[in-house]
Image (cartoon, rainbow, N blue to C red; front, side, top):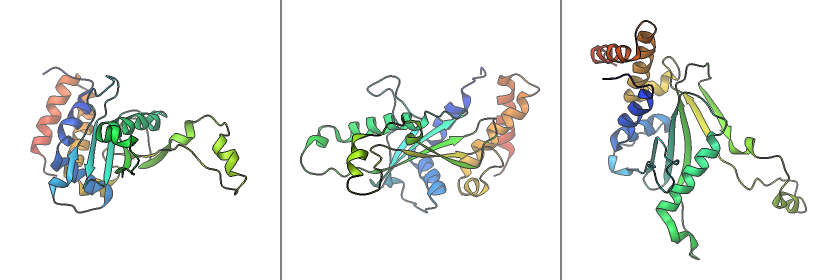
Length: 215
């Protein structure tokens, strides 16, 4: 086995891109207790429409919620804009020409989440907004709205949660998701062994260690 610098992304997708694991992760994040795996429908983007648009994990919950999750080792201020592309493609795939019909099409409500496990210090949780990266130019809608009230309409926004999943962070979340805790522990062990070993050997040692642990 050759050491892979993208092992964290590969492992994350392998663990969570299936209905049972996605349900466990959703319950941990949302504080719910769903048990029916059939409520989950995986719709992760894989080279759809544009080869550059693919995400780590997305799924529907009971046809009402659309959860988009990215695993990141570095935080980009452009994550909200990327999620905007993801949700647009998913809606297009799911509804297509139905969106052009006269009758209303009810869209599953989206939630956007980044699971962070980089080395740089980061709080347990932080919110990012698409509005923060939009040019500060007053739009026509806002100008017209001021004639009616003092509220300032925001024509487009998207808010995402960035959750730190490094070992020792968000203990309650880890308690609720055994798979997420195991993943977090594995990454921490690889980093520990990598201090004195090549990545390939560090991964092997971490695997051996995780097989012996009980979470």
